[in-house]
Image (cartoon, rainbow, N blue to C red; front, side, top):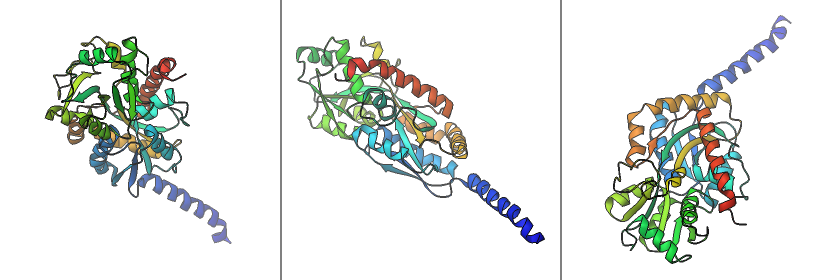
Length: 324
């Protein structure tokens, strides 16, 4: 009888200890990071940089899976609906997590419908053309847009992301309609490079990472960057302020790590610790930098403040950009 009376307490201790052990040992198997865009783009490169270094601090492999479609919406929706255990995470991007919720009425999630684990990196936006293009400067591009409205085309990575907002802001600044250049959407930045090099589109404006190598190698020509200072890897490209459109500085890319809503607190804390170690890791800091991006680790709270400001800025543009 004494043994039986102790049984509930023993079981409670066992299961309580089991829960504690589970929390302390997360993760006990590999973690998947879903990239909502195709291979070779800004999100993909950021995710693979994260996986290559952060796995050492996490204690488990990080598997990168591309789940492209609908400008990042399909992959984002997949993560929202994933189990809330920390084993399926999202490489969040400005387009899929701030611009699309602000501008695209078809998006079925809000900017804050995720567990934010931390900002990873910020990348300048750049407008590029093929080196074979007759457009040799930003002035050449704007002159062509004014002289031939509706004739030039630009490659984007979605229908409602920053790669669309940047060209549209240029058009609006010129007094043109938002559709005065033809949008040609692709699933990844790497596909926009192919499009430019093959002559299928005239220009593209997107996060700088997938374009840096081709600019340095001479296959692509940069016309403008969205940063206040010139980018060290491609110092020949003028800034938005230098070309007379400082409001283009609003449009910069960023990559962050998100999870499904309501992640357990121990998972959030574990990733906060991992990213804090990543912040001081020379190998990881070198990877975004060589692509022209800026390593920018933020806490979950700081990330939330940053993303909310981005969402509100794009939401304010909705009356000008979203088709009536």
